[in-house]
Image 1: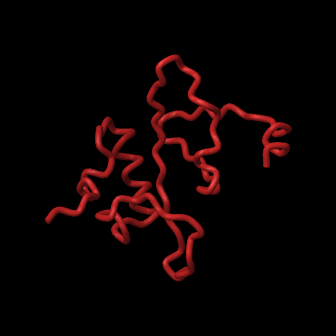
Image 2: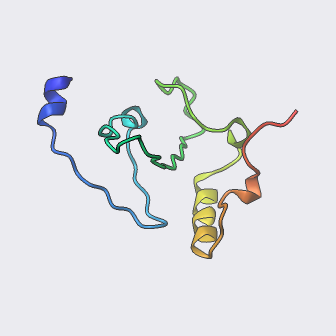
Length: 102
């Protein structure tokens, strides 16, 4: 693994609001070290979906807020993207905050 990473060519992915990147979620934490003195915050929005007919194990523990599970489709995501483009601050407002309340 170390040998493979040492020889891998890094690519900078500059995205604009509304852009989408598809990737294998198992590599989410393979970024470079946070070398800013004292650390800094990095923000990444990760949206996961899969075919509802697929019931097998994902191979990793998901990170979706429980209140969003089975509440959105890929089409819904397109609408939230449009909401953001129109100046919306919280793109999933119509779905709540995703947290389960007692």
